[in-house]
Length: 349
Image 1 (cartoon, rainbow, N blue to C red):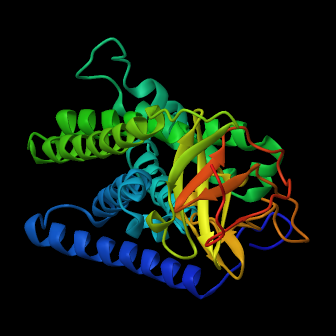
Image 2: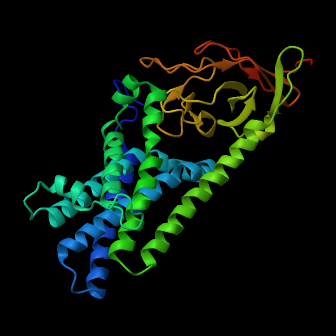
Image 3: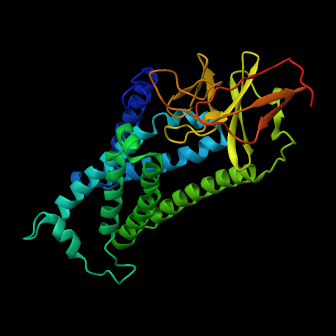
């Protein structure tokens, strides 16, 4: 984490991920065009580029939409979240090039402006099969542009996290529009069913992993643990948490991250102030809770970011009875210092 709207500075990990991302895109484009030319030698090179860039953007969108639920199901996928923004911008650039090439190739030779020609060229808006699929792609690209343009932390800070997150949830609307764009385009211009089947398989995959991840978190959030007379909830045992790691528990409808480190136990809100990242899935590095998404840091005892940063999350009072960790159900104000429970000290119930 760095200062002045730079959530994560350029480092070796981000450079490696970006190199892998760009190399993968270039390799895909080369393979697609080589294989397509081998099987369809009569296709013009420009037409191949349109299909190659469009399919690359659509596949990358599936990867982006898969990262979130996969990370919920297995923390091994969490490193991909570190570079998801760059994936999104790359995906938008691929889609923009696809749209530009298609627009100029199909609508650049008439008397109308290409964009006007696109809007009025196919007037079958009331026909499901012959509906102008290009319009769906244009709407999706507009949404993706807004997301790419506001991907920087400057917009996150100035729009506020709830507004920014709501705006970026538009990726699901864009995905639905692109599914319609590709399927209708295949139906109208390509009689082979392979593309439609492939899009259906991709849609099934996205829906399935989101439902699985959502149902798992729903069950966890629905669990209710009754507080004792002092307002403490029996959250878990000390042995359930690995050293310098956390465990997420739901207390009074709120997710709480309980951490074990250096013989102590502390608890903070699970929600990172940056992009609502799951702090409990991160680990303690150099004495600070480190969000697994973008590296924001918080001191376990205070829930505050170390200076010069000003982010703060709520803390929770904790105590130990035997090996059981008890967390107070009512949170403290963000940034409130709490005394961590010391492992090995005996407290009476």
